[in-house]
Length: 157
Picture 1 (cartoon, helix red, strand yellow):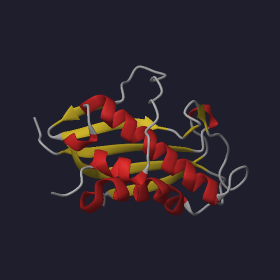
Picture 2: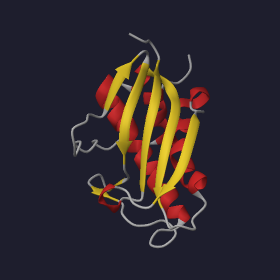
Picture 3: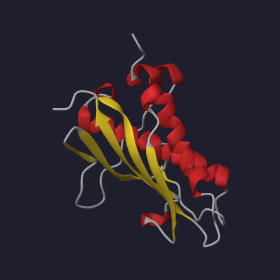
Picture 4: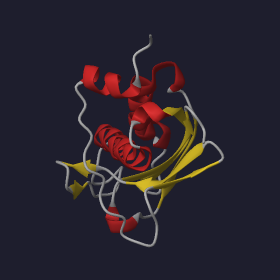
């Protein structure tokens, strides 16, 4: 039997953070038509502080890539909160990544790869997904990265 996403987290030595409480009128996610749509999340450092700054000015590409990975951990935590276990998910279908970047920054895809590579590791054959990565002039709270995700449920209800 293939290893499950929850088992892969343990094998990889990954412990998910507690997802932060929503700061507006939304929830972590919503299930619709066999898909889990997750709200955008940001990078938690040390489990309670959001990474802030402008990529290409205050934050390097490698730091931002790590921030995207941290954001992926928060997304997984939010998904687990919505469905009870990551084993209920087949894998990611689509990511939309926003990078708080300088006007001349052009490595958005490289930054969001931090999240994509995490999902590849956790979901194995089902980790590959469609994706968009764009730069924006600002993000809430000056966070470096925000990513939203859509996951397919393993057993749609």
